[in-house]
Amino acid sequence: MSRCKACDQILGEYELKRIDKYTGHHVDLCNTCFSHSNDALNKLGDDLRHVSETLSTKELDELVSAVYNT
Image 1 (spheres, helix red, strand yellow):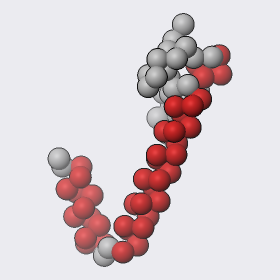
Image 2 (cartoon, rainbow, N blue to C red; image 1 turned 90 degrees about the horizontal axis):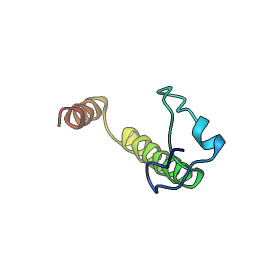
Image 3 (tube, rainbow, N blue to C red; image 1 turned 60 degrees about the horizontal axis):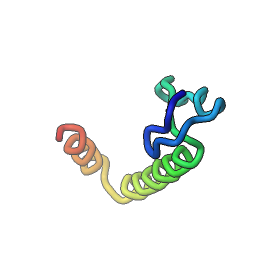
């Protein structure tokens, strides 16, 4: 028996089998938490696309370097 990493709810069979398509690891989130996580990631992606459209390549490189070096 496994539980959701976010809310501690017992995971169902489908939830136990869910694999992250980018990492290949088990997600270990219930459907509700998985949905909220996807919404947050999609919003972040939209925000990053907007920022990348307004910055020059040099400014974007400096921003990414600063974030990854902290």
